[in-house]
Image (cartoon, rainbow, N blue to C red; front, side, top):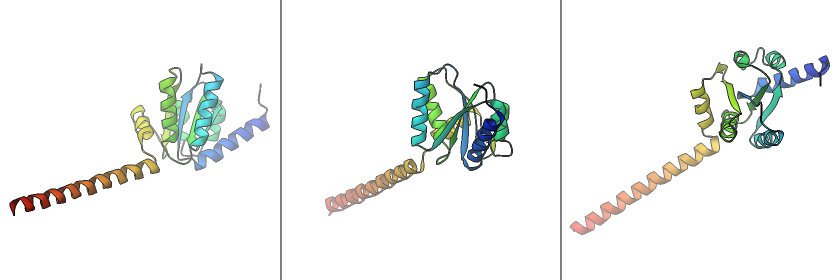
Length: 165
């Protein structure tokens, strides 16, 4: 189905608005992935604040012009599946990374964060970055281990003191 000019303008403005408020963006080639799997991916993305769409490269190039994601223009080939992380910068990258492990035809083609195009290593680092909630949990576990360690140290010191007395 061919898009008329008005529909194209709507798509470009919608993606441009998202591009102006998103924290990061990840692009992928989704050729050969069945619709049911893509719908499941979209559903899991909505749950974690990731906005996704499949867009023609010419429209996407116009939409990301003068945004922090303009650096992605070089990576656009074929029909592009793009995910914008709205809550946590690594959400889209993590979602795509997990999906590509299960679906070998799904290839991550690029990503942008803070106006910079990311390498494959940096995309993996972005995907592995803990969310706020995960970071708090890790911090609490470390503090809990420190307190437990100090308690054990104090108890062993008391025991030694009683043994020497």
